Image 1 (cartoon, rainbow, N blue to C red):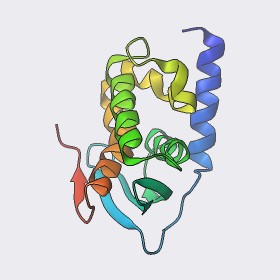
Image 2 (tube, rainbow, N blue to C red):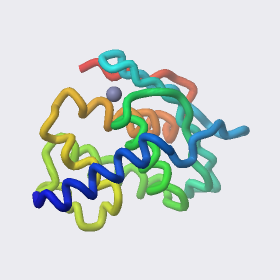
Image 3 (cartoon, protein in one colour):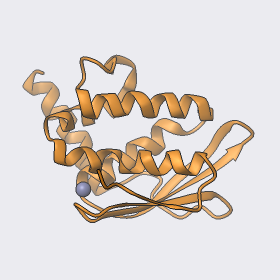
Image 4 (cartoon, helix red, strand yellow):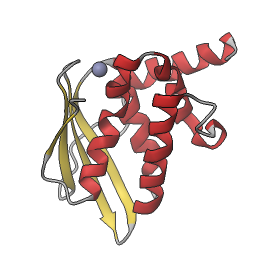
Length: 150
Ligand code: ZN
């Protein structure tokens, strides 16, 4: 990866870590809690569905810059997508942070690609994927607490 791209990715993570988007409670939404005990990241993810489509998505809580930036970028990437598209994006995002950018077709992941560097730091994978695991739980009905343990 070029250092220029590295810098850009760094910038995106810092920006979203400091000023997370869609960072609020969503009344009347389905929600689930996510906890990453290793780092102390703790979020609630809210989703409002309109049929099969994600009409609105938000989160609140606290965590490290990576976990917060990842949750923020996730909410931006998901608005207007169908549940099936969201699950597919989750699969690809998971491949990105566990196996690296070559396997994940980074080109059409948009800003989510900023987290590709995480694949080099296994301990941060849980930080980056916490919001996504929580989202997965929300899309299956919510109401539970997801704890990343493996
Ligand atoms: Zn973390």
